[in-house]
Length: 122
Image (cartoon, rainbow, N blue to C red; front, side):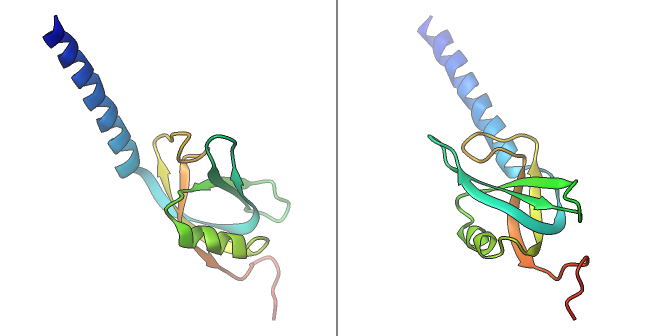
């Protein structure tokens, strides 16, 4: 009986580890988006995560919500600095997310400040 219980618990643990590794290491998609950085904050009570939004149009009708992992310190600092500016972000979309990572499936890996195509500053 103990051997069967050990095998069942070991199998469930292995499946959870494989699921977690799959979500973390296998991206669903990768790409870039650009727009005005309208929001970036450290949210949560028990679990703090970095969350933000980019407006991808003049009227703000299309909003791209994203998260940033705590390990990406340089990206966090740049996003704080670029608040209100037009930015281009590189992201990884995951199949799913855990609460400890963030609220969205989109995780920013790189950010660059860009010139807005809506307002020519010559």
